[in-house]
Amino acid sequence: MLDVSPALRLRDLSEQMGVTEMTLRRDAAQPEAGFACRGGYIVTTRTTEHYDFDAQMNRAIDAKRAAAGHALDLVPEGAVVFLDTGTTLPHLARLLAQGKARRIITHCLTTAEILQGRSSVPVEFLGGEIKSSTRSCHAGNPHDRLAPLNIDVAFLSAGGLDSDGALSCSHDYEVPLKRAAIELSKQCFVVMDASKIGQRKPVVFASLDEVSGVVTEAGLLAAAQLKM
Image (cartoon, helix red, strand yellow):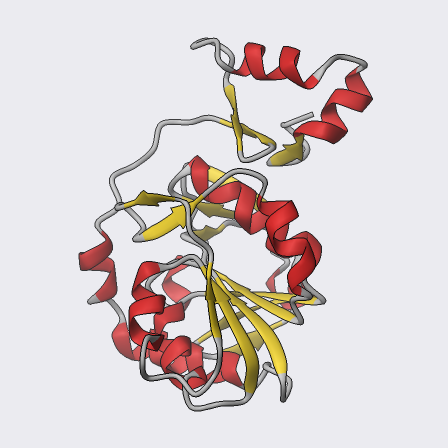
């Protein structure tokens, strides 16, 4: 099943397979399993590449700022906005700090630091275990955490979008919250600089068909435009 979907909810998989969630958790704990349980989801496990957050923050800054500007145009007035971790979305956070959104939700420490004391918009920070590789916090049951927040638009980061339409990132712990944001937001856009198109990182978290569109420095690219 994980060959078809990059992540499956533990509860749903338990029902489909007719086994208990505890059985799936136990199987996932085996070193040779090839999958793991992360925040209520079963995800594939692959070798994680080194990700230098500081180096990425200083790469393609102009492109990231331009992409953030285009993303701002997609925020409805008075919207509840979710901002993923990553090195492009902090630029969007700076733009949102002056208004437009009704509420900003994030688990990214960099974004929270930008907004702290500078934002005229209420900010809700999702805590959890700190992951220094992405400067973000992660905890169990992300679906349950996001469900009551009524997210109008979510903006996600991605390390790659390959020719098969697979959206990918560098760490499997990122997947559950990304999946929850995709499933629970009214609209969901991936924001990246165009150099990441044609790339594939170790962990696939979604397919292009599952998101509303991809935003780069060139503007909004609908899913149909990116079919290769």
